[in-house]
Length: 234
Image (cartoon, rainbow, N blue to C red; front, side, top):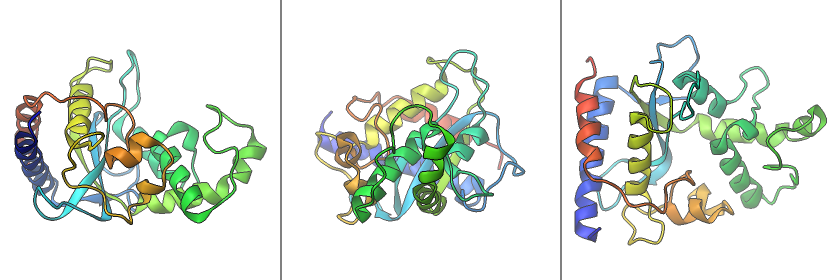
């Protein structure tokens, strides 16, 4: 994809995101959100991060993570359920990074940035209570970090499965915004926490994502995304 054409597409993407924010009235943060709020059953979300600004494509914050849910056939996971996994547990302030790749990646970056010792972090898909209790300090730091990140969400009420419209939008958004092995557009600042993450796909892409960062994108997805936003009720 030609660099100038990609920049045009990134600018178009952010114009759609601006319209989404206008219709939602404001960005949210997980630190103040709960399941009692009004959430669509299914959708896609876009996280931003304080200090991570656009450079080439305009002004304001850049998107640092795109995600969705229910990409397996028969999955009943709701949008809020997925967001709550990223948010963590209100009562303890902790969370479960083994149930959220977003939390896992942010935790890896914090470990490296602060030279912490958590050898069990990111080990296994589950862990006994003793290990989880030993990780609670880091889980709390992750909750605090993610909780401060503004985000927007878009309702997409399709069926669960790998071929869902949500999956199509997610894949192409990530591929468009990723700077992995590409001439960077809106690169991360030197102080971005993700630069401390020891996962190449994160620090090279400038996103808290691993899937699809190496992929090419289909520019036609922008028309679909725009149509979805325009169908929202004001």
